[in-house]
Image 1 (cartoon, helix red, strand yellow):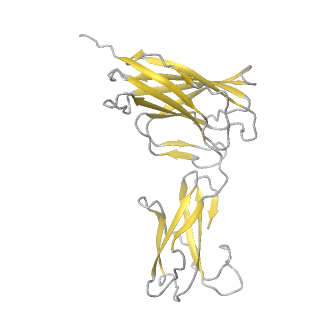
Image 2 (cartoon, one colour; image 1 turned 30 degrees about the vertical axis):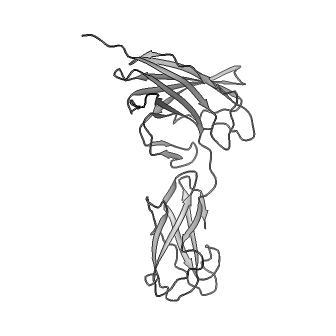
Image 3 (tube, one colour; image 1 turned 60 degrees about the vertical axis):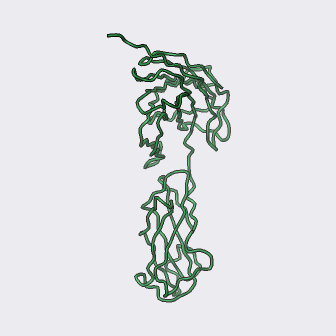
Length: 292
């Protein structure tokens, strides 16, 4: 049997800056050449960065590396299973003068990928869709970013033996999951403006746009309707007013991207036309509460 040798020539690897609002890295390796290699074999390259002692940085920050591999020949796109990746990080404190740790990082290309917070319950972040050619490399059990550290990361790339011989671009984006202590932002979409509740239209659509840097806890979303402008915690006031109580029957519509419900005036004992106040609450998956 004649064995055909497939040469895989990978193009430049680009190291993109750490994409967070709360953290800063410096001295990032700008670009590295990845050696050509035979399909089925493994090649590697090294890049590095520093994590300085700055006000916006903090110890034990979780690092994720997103790696994108793209074929430079559009007739042969990258599919899942074409490549396998592995990362190993060597960490040095005091900007490279003191060896601290070696950290293996798994590289996943299949969703879902879930990250847990180190000291809080529930999932910190979930990636539900991963396009072909994209990998997320991380260590779920070790939050590696240390202040005043120098990090050298080795990226290993291997390919399927039957991979089409050609050139591929590889880019690496360094991501940090930023700690979140803010609740979701809630915007009332419907009813809006000068709309009022009326017996002539007893089914009132309620639509909320709820956004957060992390996923919303759908089970926490609720709303209420009152006929007096008081705080949503106004239960127990020594006055008589209409209060629907908290209503949890509201769900996320995948098409509109909104949380939607239908408020039935009759079922909720509301029998007078007029202007009313709508309150809403929601939590993100970390338990942070947002209010409307």
